[in-house]
Image 1 (cartoon, rainbow, N blue to C red):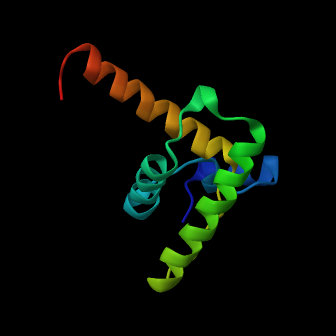
Image 2 (cartoon, helix red, strand yellow):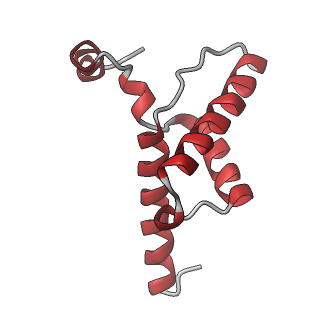
Length: 100
């Protein structure tokens, strides 16, 4: 289910708040696998590439969730962009500290 703030956001913005974030193991691991497969780098991605990446991600997420009997909330491109930004910062921090 949704938190109260997610429910409020959904009503106010007319978009499911869960579409704006990648969370949970299935979503996260799919994202990381696709990031490696397609070599996503945030500053090299065009809006069209984000749209294609999001469509591909949503299709694969639907397949995984369907196989596990779960419902899917399709992601907004912003969710992928934000998650990629988070991951890139973590990677840069590990590289800067030589913490592999």
